[in-house]
Length: 399
Image (tube, rainbow, N blue to C red):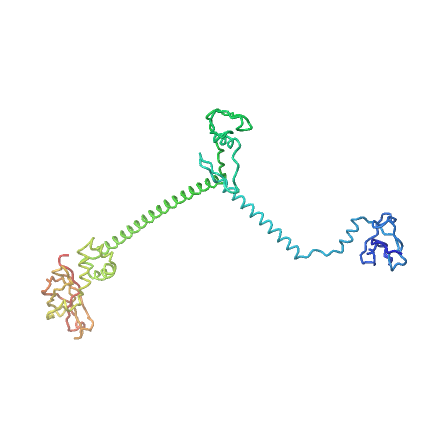
């Protein structure tokens, strides 16, 4: 008995489904039995001999499930596409898209560059190489007739040459000019780029002008502020210098030295302002600050006469004071000297005075000479027996 052809047959194991017979053996491929008439014959053969037993082959006629059913059964055994293959396909598509985009951009740029080239008026560029283009047919024929006619003789405008062209005589009048060459196409992209560039240039120019004007305005404003600050500072220095000048007086002679050391001597700007506002007072304060009343090299004393009156309540004191000439006095030639007189209980000059007072009337002494000082002091035996006289302050005579 012949072997049945491959097809779907009833499962001999009794599962109630169809099983694929490969022609030699039963496979492990199954599918549900169709609801259609099961008496249809398989497409593979018209008559199928029955197998002897179920082990050797199918015991029933194969069912016809159509080409789609057979293909579905065969496709169910195919493995699913791997993840690497899917990634490779996506990468290939991406590369293809990138290449297409790059080619499109390159061709577009090339075409724009070609359209941007213009031929000067009155001249016709002769195409060369592969890009040679044919001239318009009427213009080519006109040039040929202008150069020669069919007989080989030079072409004469207006002369008829029936064999010169299969199209007959030249319809244009004698001396007619050849048709003008078509105007070169202007690149729209180039025009747009030119407009955009010009607009950007104008914008940059405007921005530059605004920045320059703004910077100049800010510089002017800064200079004005600096000038105002300098003026205010100058005014402040002038005010301070004027106050120092007002404080340098005969009545405030004891503070003149400290004022000078605190302001003019420490601040050059105040010193300059004082020299301009009160030059004489500036010189006096400077001399007072340099010549101290305790300077023994400048001020010296004669013997002191100290006489107790009959009432034993007062003491008459007299002495002489000498003032040596010194460069520290500057232009001063005479000074008024105020003396401090009093008593001390002991011979040591370091012993403090038990009583003292400053003479109300100064003694005028010219530089390099001496003057006499006379005064009356109240006395008490507790004051001691040592009389003292020394310079307390001095001031220029003419101020």
